[in-house]
Amino acid sequence: MNKKKIAVLTIMVGVMSYAAYQTGKSKTGLKNERAVEVNMTSSVKDSGKFDYYSENEIRNELRKAGVSKKSIETFISANKIALSGDIPLKQKKDEFIKAIEEDKKNYLAVAALGKVAFAQDERSTAISYYKKSIEINPKFQKGYENLIRRYRDYEDYENLKITAEQLIKLYPEDPVSYDGLYHYFKYKKDYKKAIEVGKKAIELYLRGEPKYYNYEFITTDLIHRIAKDLGQKPEETELTNDYEGRNFQLYILNAYIGQGNDKETFDYFFNNYQKFKDNIKYMGDMGYEYKEWINEYIVLLKEINNKHRNKDKKFYEENLKKFKFLEL
Image 1 (cartoon, rainbow, N blue to C red):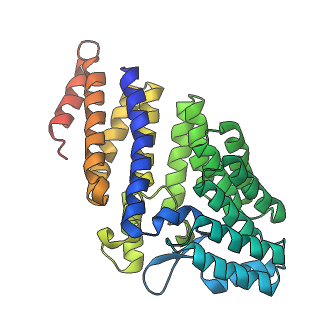
Image 2: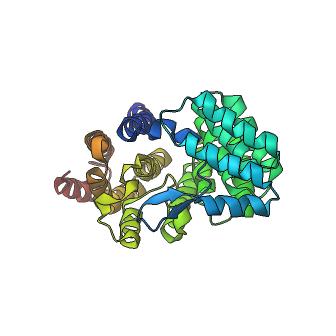
Image 3: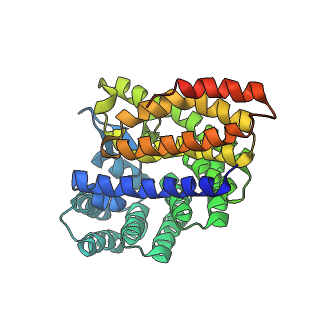
């Protein structure tokens, strides 16, 4: 196995994720500020589009926590401002601070400050705000998810594991915790566990509630389900630009390769190849890069297969036949 190539492909996963994020920023005029969206959960609106908490949902959420009406309305106003790509980050930050000054129990505003800090690449500040939001409301699901994602981004895998396990205890059906655990086990080179939790995450998405649709494990199967729910064609859903989910499917392939069980690796690849192929047409501007990326994996897998030419000729020839029918 060419470990150098595996390492390169692993890097490509991260690079492509970042490139996709940058592409998304330029497309919408809003995604450049996506980090400061409050986005406590996602829901399907009557308009047929995916959106975040409605104003009434925000009000109900914060009223239950005993947050003052004044702070709630300030937060809703601040959230509208945050969703504008034309407003400077400092102004967005000031609006959320105002909501907190009116009521320190407003944990949604605290979490929003964490997203502002993340957008400004203020790592420790972002983490502290996310932690504070959980201190205020220990059952704040999105607070744990925020921390998991940031620990993953900052490669703080030990704290990532701790937070993911806390989230599982509170919300065992939340796939974000298994996202975090995948990256933890991959870091530890425990590929078997990485594959296990990665598959668990995708399983939870496929059977999960609509509120989970806007997360990062968007797979081709799930896009079709979302499209059906919305009465749309798959390529029309807003989530077709969520590239991270496609990357995650290949994260699992990467873990199989790292594990070194070639039979399981080839089984996973060939069984999921049509899905990898389908992903290309849903990826907009990133489709070309994704296609090249898949081709790199095919080259690597062919090299792995060549090592079986003499020691397991039957295995080698079966894979060789399958490769001949691949077409992107």
